[in-house]
Amino acid sequence: MELPNIKILDESNKILRKKSKDVTFPLDDETKKLIDDSLTYLEMSQIDEYIEKYDLRAGMGLSFVQIGILKRIFVISEELENSEFKRYVLINPKVISRSEELIYVGEGEGCLSVNRPVTGIVPRNARITVEAYDIDGNKFTIRVREDIAVAFQHELDHLDGILFVDRIDKKNPFKNKDFMREI
Ligand code: NI
Image (cartoon, rainbow, N blue to C red; front, side, top):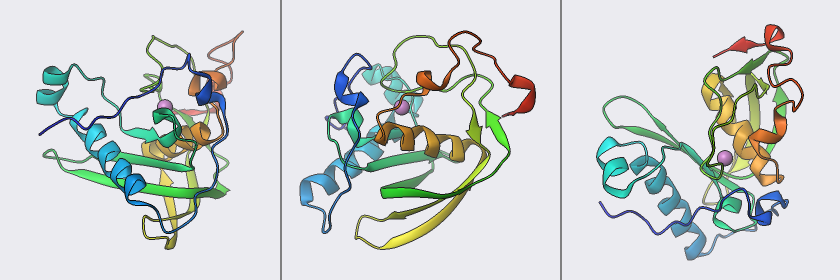
């Protein structure tokens, strides 16, 4: 498999701080191809053979802003068993409800745009419900939990110009740890 030509911007790029804009339908072919290429890239980045071959960092989610396009689109590819992946494509997503329960990823969150070690807690809702459009412009509602809920919130933040490092308390990176559940 050939690695798609996806150039991911680093956090030093100011575009990552901008708010992305809603997309109109129908999507053009270029946008559809970028969605597909992004998913392929994410999947290859989670397969050892390609990590080695192309010197990749593993990632499961990508927002269009990370490739320099300020459109409210993000994709996630979750590795299931046996190198099978579950794909999520969310266009113009809106959070319609959040659980009160908060969680955080014990080993920390990662981002393909943040190329440095980061420690600290990123508080996330344990469950969220999101309304969005699919690639054909059909509206759907999805409820996600645990690690996928974290991935969704991480990508939703990207669409508003927020990076996960912004959510870590600067003075006390492990603030309120005992009030949240580690996953
Ligand atoms: Ni990210």
